Length: 251
Ligand code: ASP
Ligand code: MG
Image (cartoon, rainbow, N blue to C red; front, side, top):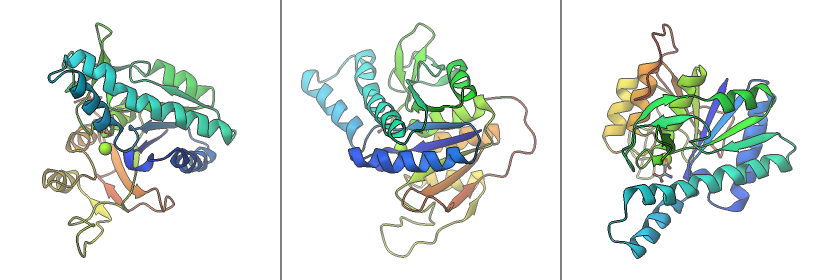
């Protein structure tokens, strides 16, 4: 089982979806079932939040979630289309359709369970399952979102539910660095323990969301950070390979 996560920086233009689709196709050719979690395109989430602000200075959080969850729906459907053009069978799913169950805390929801029946059926049929990150559904059937940057956590929670040993994050950087790679000489860190990766995330590095590292640690899931410009190499590997497993945890 392979879980891939593509962030907003990897889906900036319509052409980006072709590049992502080619990476997914390549991973699919290895023969394992593939789940792809995608974020909203570049600034789509910010733009949707600004749009809400233009209508209401303090929008009801339920309605804001209904609005911002659209960003990821745009990405999943376009990626499914790009894969179809390559002849790769793929089906897109919202967080709700993927069985990502959260509490009722709109805009900061916590995942309380994952029931990925539809994903499992899709994978069993040999298709790629594409999942909208950042969103879920409450037990009452309300659309929720997980907080900014939450799609990293969606990917790790799905890996936990589907027994995937690793999540591959495709980024616009090669991996995790000892300091901001956009400012001066930074060293790429090939291997990190969860604790080290958490410290780097707490220090403000945007490369992996802290909550997703914590969740990976609880479930013993490895995190591979790599560049979508050079998808063949892993830049940074976080966490020891799973040795023991004492049950799934979602937050
Ligand atoms: N699209 C959401 C955000 O911009 C979630 C994510 O990208 O992880 O915060
Ligand atoms: Mg992100």
